[in-house]
Length: 484
Image 1 (tube, rainbow, N blue to C red):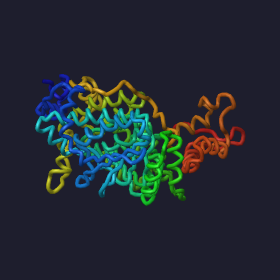
Image 2 (image 1 turned 60 degrees about the vertical axis):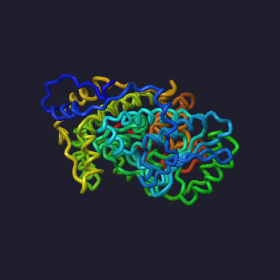
Image 3 (image 1 turned 90 degrees about the vertical axis):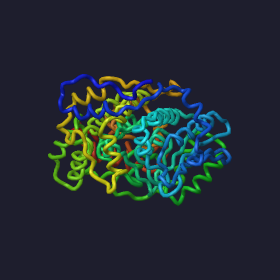
Image 4 (image 1 turned 180 degrees about the horizontal axis):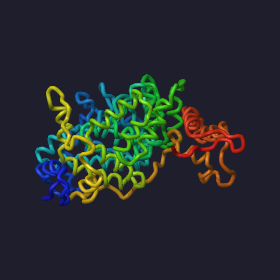
């Protein structure tokens, strides 16, 4: 049997002693993971926690654990996987929907308390949960059948594995998105490092390191969702999708756009000054440099709250998360999943994860977690490298196929990214090699609106990007500003 922990390197760093002591004192014994593990579990799956529906050409997964706000457990993941695979190859299935019921309406993320309980009991299911979930993530990211996720409520933490890698993600006025892992001494999973590292500017790093919540239409403009549709229109939209007799992504995109609420907006995801501060402060590769950059900003409620989060959350989680996000920028989805699976094994047996979850969920009253080390200065970048990135964990991730991706194949259904606008303004994009770059505001906007077939929100977002990232000149038109 393998020990579910990587072997810590021999080191003379005395400040790591507490981490090493806890790391070595908690072990989970498990068989090496393989695809055969799945077979003998399927008869025991509690199907009531995930309902399946077939309605004409539509196939639906309904997260049905309302008493836990649809928190995901191993049974739910194993319920979804085989059926998703079957529906993806079925010629009768034209579109697959994923949604939730109850007050949560989608999911508050992984049932992290269940994972901790199993880890303490040395139950291999603590790791199988992530193994099976990552397999599901790869499947969702590479589906041939159109996949629509409805985020009509909480969409937190590990729940993003069920939606962010799909082509269609619907936000409503009730949507609440956040990645709160660092506040629990935990680490990102479900391909979060791949997804967040590709958001505009430093939005991904900011969300991952602060656990900031994006609500409603802000989730749409920040790139979390591909469409913003009022909750009151979802039933009619669902009826329309059920009636479809095609599985063409372009047609589903046009259907979704018909239900979008075209409303005036005051800001595009973040207030302009906050967004500019995010890009300035979170561009650094160490948390200490980010904190120092915040100190240089004009004092505001945002700077104070952000610094407070970065100095009270788990220093280890913060540093590992930032390093993983920087590495993920040049990695494929499968490479990111492998990195996350390696890191998850290490976090399952380290102090801060256990402390963070217990402080938040089991202590009565809820208490402030006691991190080890308690401050950023207590663990260096070299320590992070040695403890988390140098030696591989004993269990490798087994995925259902060799399919991989470096960019999302259906990104055209979302709003244009900041990078796409930059390529148009600078002329560096391949589309502009012959005729030259776009120089005027209206021609840039028209280019993207036409390219996205009149999608609502494109004009608003492109205008916001141009206002922040370009300057007008008489001779050259709009010019992209150098990174500050």
